[in-house]
Length: 366
Image (tube, rainbow, N blue to C red):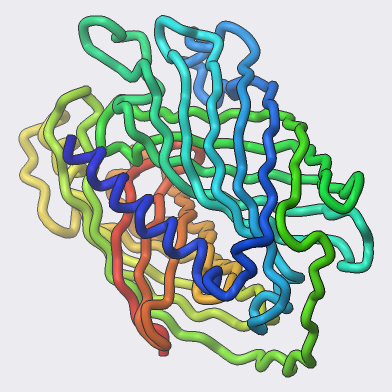
């Protein structure tokens, strides 16, 4: 229950974050879109192949409203669309997986020129998913993918949209979807799904939107130092096992490439209490702080969307005395600028395709 409440809190924050600035958009001019999905579950671990029984399918309903450039960030992002999606997927395994129901906010970032009557969009969405058949040690012990009903949800989609008339729109796309709880409850291999989608939408309100376009000042390509402190929690590998805290701090130095992109380097240290159990299981050695602490270096990237940034890290541990998960780590998530200098951080630390834990943090941008 506590894990579910944490994920619900994450969703509430993400919902408000994704719609920053939306209050200035034309709320009476919106699109209602329905799409169908067909695809499959990706077997990213050999020990989860028994869960895949066939192709998955389902549908989604979207509420979409369009920005018109009333704020400069909308012009920089080529007048993105903001939406909310309710998704249903049948997972082709009613006994062990059941169905997935998701609710998440997203943005459609336009990739092609504005003058064309069709759009090629990059759709980015983060929210919550509810899986009807999670792991249960008595009734569903073969589900080693998801250990809880409520899970975090990420959707990335390359989407195509064309107006068939002033009101009717055709949507299609191909996307990747991930659902997991960040090891708040194990087992937690997670579900990775690939689907194609297609459907129709109808525009309400003003059919002929006028896009405001002002001269955008040249972006200053400056260095952006950033310091973040992090904390998280994860469950032991055994289901219903003990929970352990993890802490960390990182310093990143980004180079601003343009209004949308930053690229940089970083260094970070971490301490995960779960690592101590590896020593206790294998020997009588009493592990100290230096045995558990890690030090890593990384290549860091951020995609900037108004006050929201989407970080992506690729790192290597230069110091790790217990590399049970390997020496390579990755990070993906979302950051939100609370003020000009203070940010809130929610990221997922992973080791290859294996999720470790959610990181909650606060940082300062110099």
